Length: 373
Image (cartoon, rainbow, N blue to C red; front, side, top):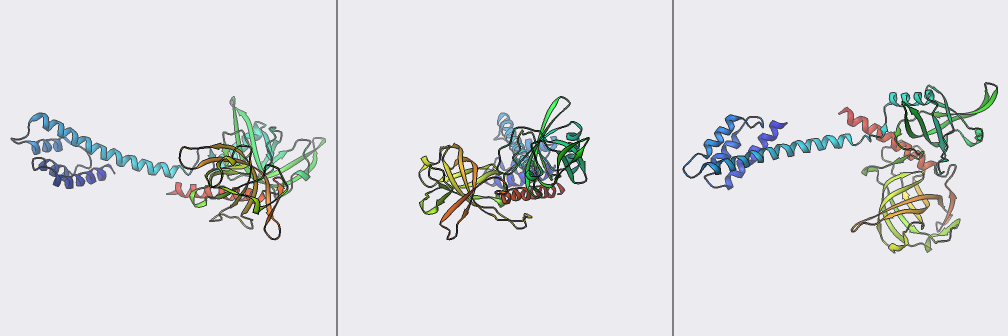
């Protein structure tokens, strides 16, 4: 590759030579004809010196111009190498260093969680993490992870097929390790173990683990092809269970940076009164999740969500960063003029949860394609 770059650079210099005084043309002709594969050889330098030999060129000038020519060659070569490295970095950027997508590594970590008696937490979509890692891993069997539940948890609280955000932590070699993932409940049951009744839950093994964060919420950052546009409408300060759309001013249009079952972060272009979008203010969000190549099945992609602004960061010019927390899922009443809200718990955000999981699987497939090139 370096040879190709050097040759390309020399060809360019041959063209440049046409614009230079006749005294310098012999030098550029020598450079343009250099075929040493991008390497500046001693023979090449000797020919350059000869190109400068003549009655009108003194020694110091020759040395200065020669140094400049060598520097130009090196700049071209380094620049081309940098571009190639940049392309390689872009290919590698599909794989987040905090993401673990290799099946064997995932099994190894989950096996270690059983061995080291890790603590797990399970959080329903839209719920705050309890802060307690009180589910205990019992076994990994086939494609199932079996956890023993705390006494306060019943089978009714773990319905089959529902999505859960899962966090786990354990200490290995004196270091605390944190991981989190999203999965579905396969089964929950209550049975007699060692003389006492215990509730257990079977979870599907995840396609991907995220390391390094002491949290249960799974967050994804959609790529450009799966970008999510969000419309922000300002809600009245009084919290209500329903609201008329006719009374709501549209204040911003935004692009999602990342999204989870707890909320989203976006770059927003303010369209209405900028002072309205401040931390603590409730807003109504309208967005549609892109389908693309995702394996979604039957999902409602259209979302209406009541949220509260948690953070705002203004820039000197351009969009505003807004981070919001989801409070309730909205649905249109018959006629379409009124939105009725349902708290984000239970199955309220199952569609969003399944989309996030589907997008995760898509990212894994994309990463494997890039690695296979």
